[in-house]
Image (cartoon, rainbow, N blue to C red; front, side):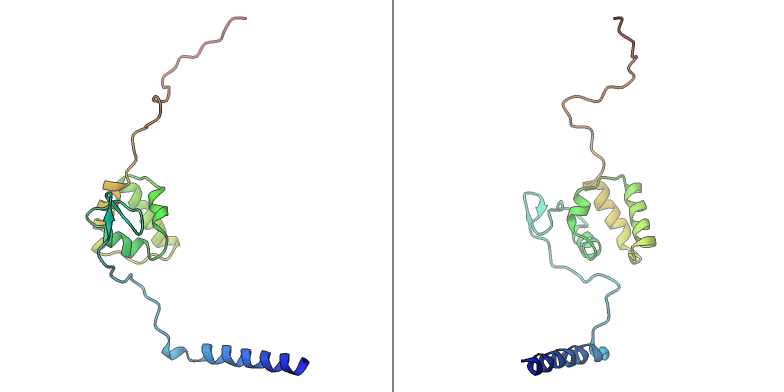
Length: 136
């Protein structure tokens, strides 16, 4: 039984070496996203990602979703300047490529669809309150 295990281990190692030794035939890692098909929209949202339908959606999908899911966009709300700061941060720390002519389109889309919202609670938070102490 032991020689069979050794033989199988040797075969597995040789297969791994053969797969990893031919690095010339591997495709280079993409530095820019590939173009996507047109988004399928239902109820004003892209079916695949949940992102809002609108001008620039496919560019956002091709650049942004190359690294993270649409959920990361959906859970954030920033002004155009805030989105620009996030893009710069991703370029400086996360390896995001230069967006070139796509950057203004991406910023327009994000600012139009994922800008900060007005408070929608039961009532607006209290502001400018003069507090006083109760007598006991």
